[in-house]
Image 1 (cartoon, rainbow, N blue to C red):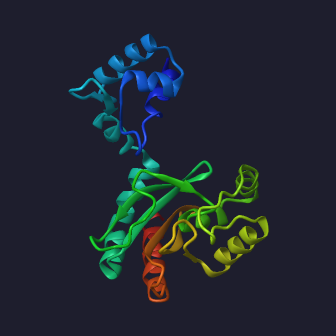
Image 2 (spheres, rainbow, N blue to C red):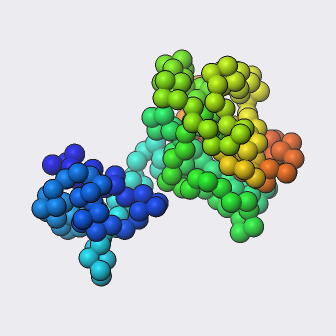
Amino acid sequence: MLGRAFRILNSFSVDRPRMTQSDLSRRTGLPLPTVHRLCIQLADNGALERAADGSYEIGVRLWEIGALAPRAHGLRQVAMPYLEDLYEATHENVQLIVREGLEALYIERLSARGAVAVVGRAGGRLPLHASSGGLVLLAHGGTELLGEVLAAGLERFTPNTITTEHRLRSTLDQIRRKGFIVCREHLNIGTLAVAAPVFRAGGEVAASISVVVAASADPTPLIPALRAAARGVSRGLA
């Protein structure tokens, strides 16, 4: 029953924030009576909310529960002052990222009104190999993780996306050597991203921080501020 409930919850996305029971039945492959019963139970417990037209959307109770996750909440609590300082220094998109499986999970974003548009969102996921923050996490994730990413395939998003094993390994070596990465139009045309790692006390990477600007911008002035913020968060976690 719990697995079926999560199949329903996992059906919602940015593109499908609200769905009817029929939609959910088609998306999950579950019989309509089962979907009907589970939707009522999920709504009674705040995991779903029922709109006036009878469709459903994710309930705020799930956000409340998710906000308690130590890997996101504790990290975000430590990181926010440094993210805010970095935002004030750049007035661009500032993001905090953790790894979830083979994807980069964006747990916070601060954006200026005039900042360049980005693909991801807070609470959204992007492939490790195609995002600056994801590449930083992959660089420090070990050989087993790299093997899994290569086995899953390196999807191309733009002409600059890393899609070969040789280029990926070379890029990861550079990240470990330099302590940051600059990605120009790897994920979407018109943007440039700079990212650096956040370390825990034991030396393992807990997260990454990235700044996204227009592709025409010079990333050089961003790097010292970005690395200072990452070091600040690392000290806070220690």
